[in-house]
Structures are given as C-alpha cells and as structure tokens.
Length: 474
Image 1 (tube, rainbow, N blue to C red):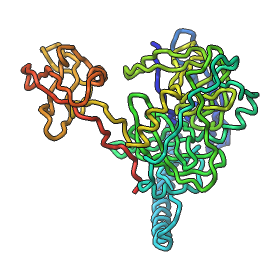
Image 2 (cartoon, rainbow, N blue to C red):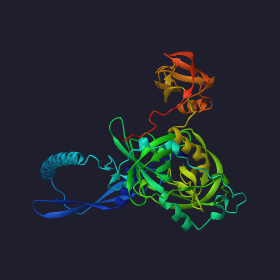
Image 3 (cartoon, rainbow, N blue to C red):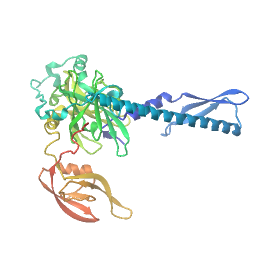
C-alpha cells in the first residue's frame, strides 16, 4: 500500500542494509582439527532466490572435511566455550577499567578547563564523523525577534521566460556553486523513556548570517539533541528556536565561528511548470551535499501526509530520499524556492518529490523568530492520543483519548472524545483538524464518554504554545 511519508533517516537501518549487501554470497570458513590429522572443512552459503514473493533464503552447502564422533566434538566445543568465556570476562574487566580511567580523565579535563568552547555529543556528530563539536553559545539572549527574513516579492518576474529565476538564471554548475555551502547536514539523538538511544538525520538551509537555519519539524520532533555540520566539516550544537507542526517548519540557531553562506530566497509563486530546479541535501544521512536535478512537476499539489495532515506543496522530479528532509529546492538563479519535506513512497514509483513553497514557509519562519511558536493556533488544553473505547464484549470504537489536561480544563484524564460540535472524530489528527478551523477564545461543545457514560462538555479554546519550544542544552 502506498502512502506519502514524511521521512527521517535512521542511520543504523541503512548501515545494516549495506552490510547485508556486502556479505551476501561470501564464503565462511569453519576449520576443524582431529587428533589424528588437521583437515579443513569449509561451509559455503549462497542466496537461493525463490520467485514466490517470499524473502531470499540462505541455503548452506557443505563441502569437504571429515566427520568426527560426537564425543570428540563435544569435548572440543566445551574447551572452546571455556576459553571464550574467560576471554569475554577479561575483556569486560579491561573495558570497565578503561572506562573508569577515561571518565576520571574526562572529569579532570572539565575541571581544568571550565570555559571550554567545545562539547562532545552523546551520539554521532553531524555527518556521522567524530571530532570537535562547537557549543551552542549564549543563544537564549539572542534577539530572535529583531531578525526578519525578507520575502522575495517577485518584482520583475512577470512574464519571464525563465520562471522564478528571471534574468538571473545561469548554468546549473554556477547556481549550485553559489548555494552549496548554505545547505547543512543535521543529525539528531533521541533518548526513549527506557533510556534507549537512537539517531536520525536530515538537512537544513542557512537563511541568516548569524547561524539561523530552517529545516522540517519532523526532522527534529521529539529529539534530545541536535547537531549541524557545515560543508567545511565544522559541527555545532543547534538550539531549537521553535516549530510549526502544521506547516512542518522548524528554526535552529548555531553560534558560527566562520562566515556563513546564506541562501537567497526566491519567489515560489513565480515558478513555472517545467522550470529547471535542483535539490541539495543529505540523503541517507551520509551523503551530505548531494545535488539532484529535476523540474517543477506541479505548483500547488494538495498532499495528504501519513499523519493525516493536508499540505499544498511543490512537486518536483528531482530525486528525493530519506535524509533530504529540510534541505533546499533551488532555481537556476541559485535561489531557495522550496524546503524539501516529502516523497511519494510506493513500489515502482519514482520522481515524485515534494517541497514546501518558500512563499508559504516564510510566514512560519518569521513567526517562529518573533515568538518561538506560531501565534493564534487554537487548542483544547489537553494532550490527546489515539485509542479505542470498549463498547461491547467483542467490539471497540476508535476515539481520541485525553491523556493529560492543563489546569482549569473541564476535560478529565480518561475521557474519550466522540464529537466536536456534533461532528464525529475518530482520531487525534481528525480532532486537531476540526479545532484548527476555530478561533482562539471560541467555545466548542465536546461529546465525551466519561466513566462509560456519554455527556457534553463546553471547552473554551486557548492559544497553543508548545511546551518544548526549545531544546536547551544547559
């Protein structure tokens, strides 16, 4: 079944797939020795493809060697097991000792240099390379509200044969050279409730010389730390200024140690069908700076994402892959005309990539700079998750479930929301879409099931302010 996916790269999964490709078909040697003589026994593995929609099977094919008695083999295996156990124990003790020594030295280094300008991340640095990671700096005192990213109004582009590029259109090589260094690699780490660490990756575009970067909300949503790697190899901690979940935009800030290349914004409303464009991003989280070419395939494509969100996006034939999220879509003048955020994922489908038009993104960008969130977004003052209410011995009904409530809310934890102003809602996404059509301060009537009894609750909508508007390293 095909669907439109917002994508985040999981580096570990890609590496496992690459390793599988490298190892298929290799020979594995298993050497046996008897007391009388030494004879090599080689066990070969081959991939047996079966054209029946089943996964390939690994079929062992044994050649050569002499058979041995079970008694001798068991004795030898017991001895080998004992040796392995001793080695593992020794390695564990040595590793623990080394860790304690390294930890002690690390603590000592922190004490001796309390004003160090670098930190080491808990996971991989940007681009997956080890090395110095520059600290985020005093960004909390930075005047975000004093920064405005100007919109390109497209003056002079009316009737242009070059679409949004106008008279500034140049060769692809020149356009790429002008903007390549404005696209960054983003790597993230996430710590689960159970303490498990996972890594992700994406892309971003520098839009201000002070180190302000635009990316996708889904690239950094729920993460514990964010790192940005420039094309010169320098890696920085990134501060999350704010996110726009609805329009899939997020704003990051780094404290650069060098002059940055800033992307010039284009005018996406001046784009033409068939106009040449190119994307730059970090596909697979390991191929930063990758350039792919294409054209504008559609200008206002309504796309329903896998989470139910409907967005109006640019469609392009430029190759888009996992890790490209948050990267730039540029015209032949080297201007940013879209923020890449999606692709159509289905077997046999190619060349269906999507980007947020920069004329749409600019409003989210400036609101996030001013406030750290999108003002005027209504909410019911509760955390809602998808669930199902049991209505019979064998039957249940999907309904939004109230997981947590803010102070003063008439809702209670454990409520199931059935209707909003008479309209049935079956998922948290559906509930959010209905609420977002209202105004802050408006009153809505919710039909809820509380303690297995149906009742109505009047809720006054409040302004939605994300609780985790920033990722604070301090």
